[in-house]
Length: 329
Image (tube, rainbow, N blue to C red; front, side, top):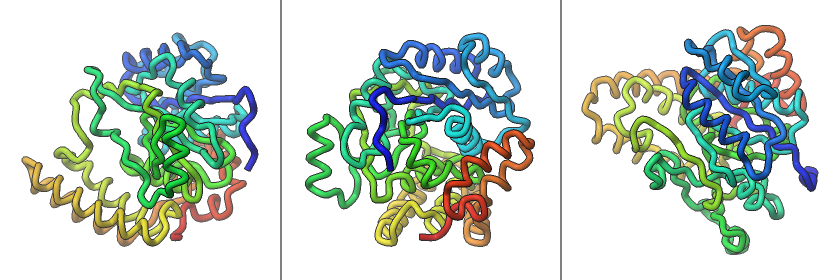
């Protein structure tokens, strides 16, 4: 694992889908950073609006790729990260959704917070439009954190974490090359949790409160508030992660399984349409136990030869990635 260069190449990866007005704000935020991003990659996830054209107009130097069909956030970030690695020689990837508006010093503070031995990932403080912390992206301190790691993080004005969110995640490119891309088959939900825990296993990650982004969701709330049919992805993907991902060690899997059960019970208690949740839960349970995520080279094959080759090249350096994606560990 090499140390980052003194002037790192930071490639911002934005996944966009049908939110062209918010995408404009994201791009304006990226272009206004006190420490400039080196490149911007925009993955247009087969939007029905003019998101791709907006991106090309507002950020003329951006690398804008329109996918032939919607691959979800997971597929978009897999393609975007692959492109940043293979086409732009990134030192760091800065991953964010198209409703994540970075404040001018967001990147500068992330890079500062990521300084330190074995620190390979940093996440921003995420606020809503009124300035309060967004409950969808509230970090928790790393379980079983050592006294030394806690002290080092506190000295840097940060918090040691075990996972992070695609609502502004800065991650070392060489670690992504070693450990693999986001898993496209997750589609939505838990893709960033799986990816970040896999990146951070045996490494250090930090929450950087001085780096602020605004998450412009329609409502202020967490993802477990009446998710409806999307609860299927929460259940299936969490089971996929616990059964097949290399992200967590066995003790951590026990810990997170307990917290997952509590979260699911809380979701049912708060729901106004439990019949929908029950149906989604049954389907998620069935698929989570009987299937496993496909490797990205298979899951993204429909996107065409150019995209498939980019993903294949990015996966080639990761043992088992091209053949089998994630594996139990």
